[in-house]
Image 1 (cartoon, helix red, strand yellow):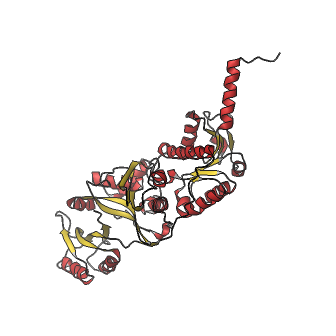
Image 2: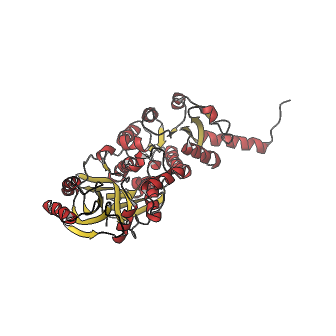
Image 3: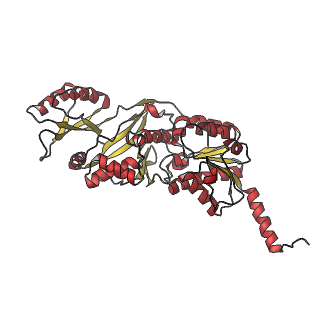
Length: 439
């Protein structure tokens, strides 16, 4: 005889089936640190609006987890995912290849996409937004900048009524950890880097972080979302933090400042002034108070004034929260039958310049001899640059003597010819470290 099912059990089973049928179907491509955290949230949240249907990854048999529901399909075949009935594809493999082809294929087939891929959005964001709109889908990328800090959703929705003209931020947690460790422990740069690598804050090859490539890509995304400006990351100058020495924090402290890697973009008429690199910032400013691997983004608007966003910029769980938040937004839009974000048709392509006008910090390491300051002052005067102060701390060997000259505000373009001339002086034993002073 067939087994009888009680009415309550049958009703519960029917209700579960109905919820699954009405839920938005989600496929996950990439099961690394962030992908695993995203899957964990989706499987444990009990939110009936999202249903994980596929997990795609290389060597997928080694990735399987017992907490994933049995009806989820595990596969290493990306094309099978793209041809499935999943409505939203989460791309978490990173990089440009094959991520770009995967995202374009998903959008081209009418699916929506959620991604945390900063390089992809920095280089192809406007085109992908346009493709999504033309095919009736969406692409969301709130996790591509500042991890769990909801700055991109805020720029694209919460602040879209304002007219933003400036964005600045501490966008790379690795650099901020290293600089704050040098500041607090007065240890050499190399030691702070080794510590960051040991703690998992920096890769074995941390060049993308240290030399500004990571922050530059994130700044391009912020410029797209907040300033409606198309910016090729490579068009923005990126300056390394490798030359920062513990003594620079001693001198910065005398000026009431500390040192942080700052990414900044100011839109003036048809020109976007943009730069990434170490800067002196007041110790009592929002940037000066950010320690360890936190991220901070400040926006400046014509009507709303200044806004700040602070939080953990990396890590599996914070980034996964941003991804799932984007998923929920897309699912709600699909459920409502609309509500898509615009394709950013008002995006412009401004000229890019790094010719900021600021005060400057110049740190020299020299072999001490008579006439050094006079020679430097002569070069600066010849280039019409005004000295604001001269700082020299005692107790250093005369064979490697550090001292600092600060300059009154001047344009970047006027300063660098003078620096090139100074580089050829016979008493210089290191290149001059030149940092903007932000007030």
